[in-house]
Structures are given as structure tokens and as C-alpha cells.
Length: 406
Image (cartoon, rainbow, N blue to C red; front, side, top):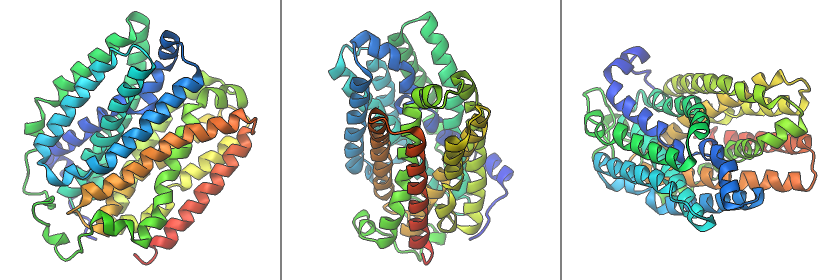
């Protein structure tokens, strides 16, 4: 695989489209677990919901969003990118504003469904698919650079929302988020989407010369392919386990491990920094030695982080735990997204990647339920973690077997 343009020159040349991807990834945040969980206490208090009630509503909404994403994901293959992403951003702005009108458990379900489907589902899907389509030689780095929008949001929005909750009500915060989505996205999309001569991928209209001899798989064909069936579990693993741990982090860290939760929260800055590092390093490696050779190893740091969480007794280990988790979280995006284009081509990439996204969203819905059920059954956190380590080793080995001859 050709190494393409040096990274800094690539960023200078393609800054507009890369900024588009980063902005879209930033505004997936209203539909992400880390942001919705910030409102958990006030939502439970205002609508008299138990932890189980809130978790059940969240899981149900996530599962329905995954089901909708399955047919909706293929729209990326059929509609013009500019018009499609513009309307999706309009829907996200309206959905965030509508969240402010939640009045009970039913409206809460539909509000979470809307922002989860648009944020974790369609907007992330659009951003990654667009990067994978527009670039071939720099595909891994393009996905990594666009992905920077997400850790930037993770580092800036939680403190702003936490401060906001002390000075105003949660409905006002959702209205403001909707307005900011509209102001930052809608006027800029036509400018940021302009093509350059250096974009060597042509999207669904015409295949790039670098991809001209590659078979273009349909989603139905991919679903019958042995390689996909063997890689699918690794796609689900971190999404399920990481979401399960983070959703129950207050109990796991503050009660089971008896670590200072404030220190754990501070260490999320290390998570974000390592996430950026993992994304850039993996994107660089993908462009040089292919995603097929990288993918089976992207969860090795995550496996190490789980071991440290199980064995660590001193709370200072929190920095290493979150750092290793962050590295794997960053590594999965460019490796998985590039893998589908390498294996199955780009003509039907929207539908193909939607299938993988559905698996990830489905796993993120099951993780909190599985971990919560184990905790309710008084299973020790150490036992939960070691089972998670075994699952991670097993799915990574299965992916290695599936891709070794790809």
C-alpha cells in the first residue's frame, strides 16, 4: 500500500474536508453515553425514575436506534453527501432542542432514541464513511484526523455542562446545544465539502483508479463472508465491555474498588490524550501495512487496561487503566473503518459499514445490562473483569484467524 502524502502536507491540503469530519464527529456527542449520563441524576429526580428504570429506557432506545440504522445506513450510498448530511444535522439540532420538552418516561424514550440514532448512529456513520470514500492512500489518517472531533468534545462538553447545571436548568442546556449544532454545521457544510485534486477516492459515483480492480461487495454478500463473521465479535467487544464499565463506573470505581472517584474523573484527560495518540498511530500504520494486519491487535491495550483494573489496588493505577483504554478506543476507529473498504470496496460502503455500526450500537446496549445484572447478582468486579479479558482474547484471536489470509 502506498504511504501517500506526508501527514502535515496532507492536513494543509485537505483541511476543509477533515474539519468537516471533525465537526460531525464532535456533534455526535448529544447521542453519546458520556454526555447523556451527565443528565442521569436530574432526569431520574425530575421524572421519579430508578436506576433500573433509566437504564432500561436507555437500553431500549439504543436497541431501537440500532434496528433503524440497519436500513437507514445505506442512504449514504444513494444520496448526495452535502444534502444528506445537511438534513441530518438539521434533525440533530431539532432533536437536541426537542429533548428539552421531555415530560415523562415515554417522551424520554423517544428523545433518547432520536439523539442516539442521529449521534452515535447516522452522524458517526456519515463522517467515517465519507473519509473512507474520499481518500485511499491516506484513508487511515483521514479517519483518525476526523475522529479528533470526538475526544475534543469529550474534553470540553462535560465540564461546560456540569457548570451549566449549576446555573440553569437541563432543558435550557439542550436548547443551547441544538442552537450551537445549527450555527456551527449548517452554514459551513457547502464550503467544507468542496473537492480537491488530491482526493483519490470517488465515492459511489465512480471508483477510484486505485480501487478499480477490486471486487465491490454488496452487504448481503458480506454477511455471508466467513471473514466478516470472524471479525464481527471483535467489533462488538470493546463497545460492550467499555460501555458496561463506564455506565456503572460510580459503583465499580467508588464502591467496589474504593478509589477516589474525583481522581478517576481527572484521569479521563489521560484517556482523551491516549485516544488521540492511538487514533493517529493506528491511522499511520493502516496507511502503511493495511488494516487487515492491524485489526486483530487493536484491543491488546484494552486487555491490559482490564488486567490493571482487576489487579490494581492503589488508585494511582487509574491513570494507566484509562490511558490504555483510551489508546484502544482511538485505535478501533481507523482500523475497523478502513478494514471494510479494504475487504469489500467502497461502492456499497455505507450499507456495509452500517451493518458493523449496528453491531457496535447493539453491543453498547447490552453491555450496561450484562454488567448491571452481574453486579445485582453480587458477582465480584474482579470476576466480571476477568471474564471480559477472556472475551477480549477470544475475539482478537478469532479476528486474527479470519484475516490472516485476507
